[in-house]
Length: 340
Image (cartoon, rainbow, N blue to C red; front, top):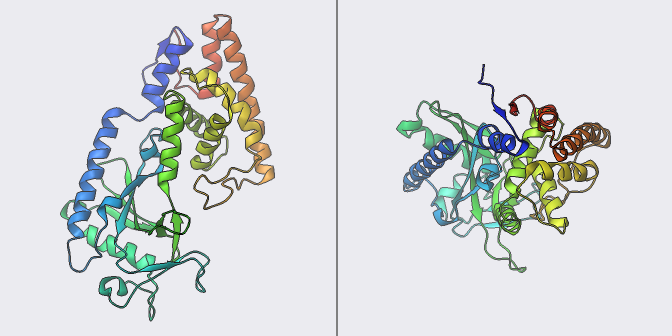
């Protein structure tokens, strides 16, 4: 049973709650980044083998909520894209064999030729992932780890850490006629698809800087609340983009006070959950695939907590910290500090 934490003000309660309950522990974050870098060094050594495709290490990229600093406790996965040199391979978005993308390997590329669909020069993303799996298992430090293919990624679970590594092999395209480049990653079905995590990273970084660095705490708080209270928004990426869109649309800046911001975001969420949420990468189209009836159920929950937040804010405005904190505990759960 945890130690009961008490605070005298809503501000101090939120400061504790974000630091100790919602946000990742700083020491674990440092350890995670160190172990991630060590893993990449091992993959670089694997890449020196004559049997392994040549790596394009300078185009490796970190993605996902850990990389964007929107991950909440506990740290469960770390996403890494490991880039390979195409060396004459080309991609085709109008394939007869897939609705996604095929990569065609020239006959001169002996290593990638061995990883193609049988009897073809179409690169098989499943075979590429399995090659990573085979070679990483041969690293002594990972020999006892749980390693398996998981859709478009290779998942590595070490006994010594609480997090998984999701390793995604990828290629980096040349500049197209529109002046754009993309990453090409496995689609989970043997072929490939486009993505560009640089856009998510840069959009959020620039927006957060504009709002004086205050957005990340709000995103993490909303994610925590959605999970803790089973609101029903299953995609944290969708929820993150809804919050981002709110801060793109408002004319004022995000404050340093998450209690104020949560009220505003929940009000926005009540209608946003029914609307299109465009993919910022302009690849997937609408991110919001929540059915209407499900969205109505989410609306009812959001509205319920929005009213509680309004009450908590009103009580705080009257300097009734005890009752305000009590309301916040209803909103955010028993890990939110009690009144002293």
